[in-house]
Image 1: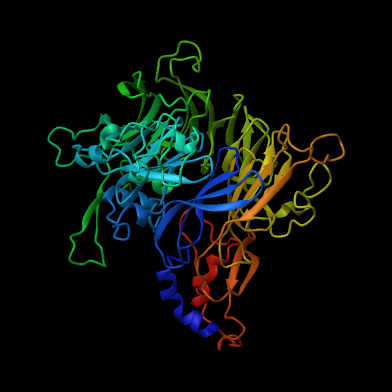
Image 2: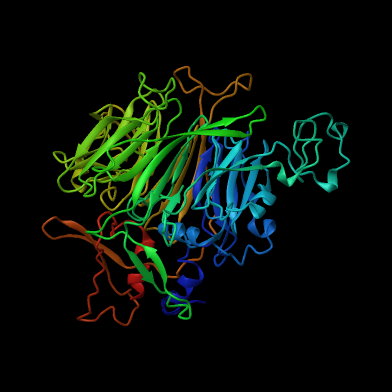
Length: 632
């Protein structure tokens, strides 16, 4: 039996072996389709670094299942020996990604096709009606043999699920997905009669009676094309131009990791190009491999020049077979001299793309719409030109609220407002603040015509807040839902608050249709938590549901946790929270546990753990934040 003393002694090694106790835990969830399904990533066990793609499914009868869609070890023999391209290593460093296998993915608008990379190879998983998946490598021959077609970085599938764009760093590439699926030799003799004429998918991947049967599969049927490339400047020793990637500042300081964005119509792409030549070079050695020379990296520093960032609007033409047939491009114009940072790009169906650009000091920003030269554009503005929709300023600092700016489906503009009078980061709709004072909006997760789903922190002095019905949003139990807690709530446009998370903690969510996936951590459990909920509505023609008293049909909400196979450190931190100093900031004080030999000491050394940058909070209702301190 492991004692507390053993757990403390083993903690550093245990933490390293389990990748900070994250291996085996579900993460990166995305609700898809009508919400009865959700994608997520998870490795097989507490020390398994290789992450697979999974699907959480609620069947029509309410049964919940977890389905393994794609296992890297099945798809590639060398999945355990990952060879990550240098550019991908940099992206993962910016995103704090330490796993291997399938570490990120992109899904189409219908939630039926998913793309990802394993060891630099591009894969596609198609999800069948029954929730099963079949996976194949995309453009295998073309990517392997095509000059300049690798590495495959940040692949993104088009909303219609028919094309995949990715970048190599110097080339923006497009893969047209072939309509045929590889035939299976175990079922080559199958006929429509074997399936009773039904186009039902078989477990081994053959599909009978539809457009994907019949023709033998040709790996080269996936068409690979180069959309645009960047080349070194004349007489340059290195190519400092990059395409389709986020520059260092965007990834490290703004949480923007994408460098290109599909339009909702699958016919437009906005892509970034940047020249890092103005940035000074830093040389970074690898202490774990002292025999390796220090590598050079251009690094943004104060009082030096930033990368030169540009955006381009591309319109893709397709032929009668829905294959790429040409490209029209137009530079997107804005005041790049005064607003050199591209903080966010967002593109909603039926509307023009939105940009959020900032000045160097991040004290001013502009929300811009990009004109497309189509019905979505206002008037006859030139293609690629921009219109300023809103401007914001703060002499101290403007926080970037992820998920903004964004249009509602019916065309209203939701933006972030740094409201100094109310001392609150709020949201506005068409310029009108609608989130209450004291509710600090940290991220926008989803926007509908009825509400905004957001991550918030409550100002601690809001303990007396009452909802319009006279009740606290947490039904009178608001303890802990303060600056230490990142809660998921729904705001309607009248400012009413509906909590989606009940316990204080560090939470996020993904919503689609009637489905919601909540994930995060709290102080009660050593393991992270992920749950999938789905609201089932009565089906026309089915059994008459019970009625809820006002004549409307009753609905039922199903909730199921997603399995977590992560290890635990074997001890709980001994934390006391206090509010200290002139600003009464929350402080976490970690003391020796009760059975520690130091528990009754008259004096103890004090170790401080401040952080030097803005925006990273150390005191959070998250048990994992305090394990290191408890070990010390």
